[in-house]
Picture 1 (spheres, rainbow over the protein chains, first blue to last red):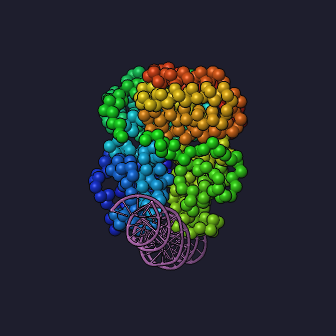
Picture 2: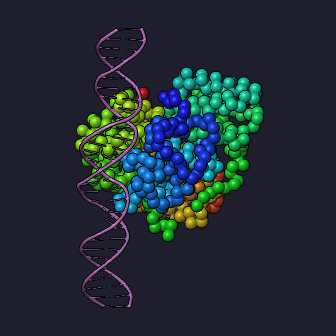
Length: 274
Length: 274
DNA sequence: CCCCCTAGAATGGTGTTACCAATCGCTGGG
DNA sequence: CCCAGCGATTGGTAACACCATTCTAGGGGG
């Protein structure tokens, strides 16, 4: 939205070194949606990303202790920047800072797993499949109700738009234009979540976007979307447009049942970590 | 072993206050059960709380511009503390900091509404009913699936504990001990969310705790819990213990239907804000 | 000889101040 | 109407005093 400059992270200008030590590559695939990113241009954000990925990716295990001095030295930044970084990590529940002790990595139970950055980091790391699974289950829980709510409280413009996107999806799906299909699919689900009138649902739009993209990148998307899926998108859109919450809800539920089925391969290699 | 520290999140002990509106000064420190989880002892946290409440409570409207100098002066803190506070607010999406322009309050759409502190602030402010409603809808979406997942993947100890808490609930409910009933109710839902094996669900335990407490404080709780609710808790517990996901799911759905019904008074005064 | 308790030292975050660099909105001059 | 430059405001660095917490060493008692 307000982020015009796409360069996202690689911004690190200046002579500061900032190399992320081990864990070499930033793999999260090219051309991906810029991580949540607050400001790309600020110095602390790169330090934040590196440490955040290390913690969420288990490179820094629970209980590990950092100090401001280590951070300062490792990244070649001032103590102030190290402190700001640490404060943000603390506010995400990833670490806890205590006098004389240092900065301790917290157990996963205290992480703010809904923070967009945390989600992003976990998707970039070894826990990716598990995270994708968790997020999909969350979608399955929330989206049907969100669709129902949208059917109740969407504005006229939103209802029209839903029908319009559903039609676009059919066209793109039948044409086999997967890239644009993905974009429209994201737009569809985002629209419904936000039209639900519940900001807790609306805030999950980014999650859905990331999951859909992840699904495509993992090749869990058929080359031609299932006709049934296209039908269901249209059914949901019609139900929303026509103000039929029950239909919208059940339609979305069926749609997600297919999604669940498609992602089942991820379920197996149970990457549950201690 | 696993039991000892488990309460971990310094919970919301029974005397949580959910202060209505008031939003006094930063006096917030004493006797106030830590809403989220930072250190109360640190200086920036009181500044954070004050400004956070003001933004989420619409006292500082979208587009309003602050400066570090104002913050420094108003709270009598150093620039460093003001900066740290601002960084945290920025990481929550409440503000955005830009050179030469200052610190701008962001629209609600960019808030991290799942951040425990944001939830807490919104519950303390004028949007309280709307927030309680949103959170309840979220519960309705998530808890049935979480119960189903718990029936699939809970540990033996967790299954036993579910049955045990359900029995406790009946006893406390019939005795009319509302305080302890509330505590046990929170424990029950927390257990299921965490036993679901999905950390996105598990992270909502605090949300449920806050909603249940809010419900009680608003007097939306009958003096004697409905027998039907007690039956349903037991039914869900049995289904989880017996590994019957469908039963657990539908049981929880019925349970939440009652919750929805009970909270309906809140639905009416549609506090939808622009 | 061993254990426990206390006092003091070492450590590392907390908060403050001062200073310079970079950016970018705004104003005033051409 | 455009453009340059001023200046406000954040971004980043450095050095300092402070103090809570932990660790350790020493002493006293069993």
